[in-house]
Amino acid sequence: MSLVSSIDTAEASYIETIKQSGGLPFRVSSYFASLAKPDKTDPIRRQFLPHPAEDLPDPFALSDPLGEALYQAVPRLIHQYQDRVLLLAGGTCAGYCRYCFRRLWINQPKGFISPGERIPVLAYLKAHPEIREILISGGDPLMAEDGLLAELFKALRDTRPGMLLRLCTRVPITNPSRLTPETIRLLRTYRPLRMVIQSNHPRELAEPAQEVLTACVDQGIPVHVQTVLLRGINDDAEILATFFRECLDLGLSPYYLFQLDLAPGTAHFRVPLKTGLTLYQELKNRISGLGLPVYAVDLPGGGGKIPLHGGVIAGEREEPGGTVYLLQGPDGKLWPYPADKNQPE
Ligand SMILES: *Cc1c(COP(=O)(O)O)cnc(C)c1O
Image (tube, rainbow, N blue to C red):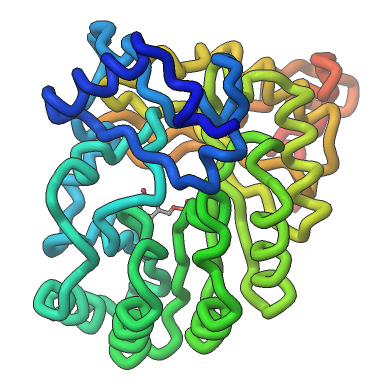
């Protein structure tokens, strides 16, 4: 049963409303739609099927939730952190996640980066040797054919031979057959290259996705996983634990668990911050450190990414040996650790 054939008339009419209003289009690959169950609470269905809750007013919504416009170095290139840049290479995705924070970008009629658009990007990379890594994102870069990808990778490599390429993509999850053995070989050619996928729920790690992701890892392409914490989808410690354990078993490295960005039309997916922190603590108590992502938020309006679970120093007190900090353990209890001023010279 595919997601598309389970759409009822109210849902169909909302999809039509979006078409008229020019909102983020409804789109899901036929492969991914086939993974969804017709049940309205299905985690795949919920991530892709438009819902009227997207029209609820949200006083906190920001059209550019990460403040990317502030850091645009040249068109399509965002330079926010000293040693790495983000390239908006792709203009489309295999499916549109309803919680997308780059929905404005997606709604512009931009295709894959053209040779003309590459020129200022390459010039900027050449002029900024402090940049050691480029995130190739979009839209999904793997929507481009191998020939176009190879042209981009080659241009980047020729300009900056040692620079780490970080391919940011959801295609291995939403349309795994796109990663043919030739594509994986192509990625191999341009190492150092790492892949960062976005995936949120154990159900997304179906057999075809598992196959291509393990093939990447086997071929020497490390794969990292970014997950978005989503209400009604994965806001459950056991679901998250199952998901990250499966990632580990497949050789994928959990990287970030993101608190939702403040994109318009996404508030119904938001897990309250304190609920998120509690969930994260439960998750931490359940799984291996190797499987634990960093729970982080991109500060609204351009403040950058910060981990949310810092602040372990809960207080300090005097002990016979001197001052100690009180560190919060997984059980919530406070444990003493010598304060800085006790450090012997
Ligand atoms: C997230 C992000 C990066 C990468 O940050 P990491 O913490 O290294 O994953 C780089 N540039 C921009 C603009 C980003 O949003």
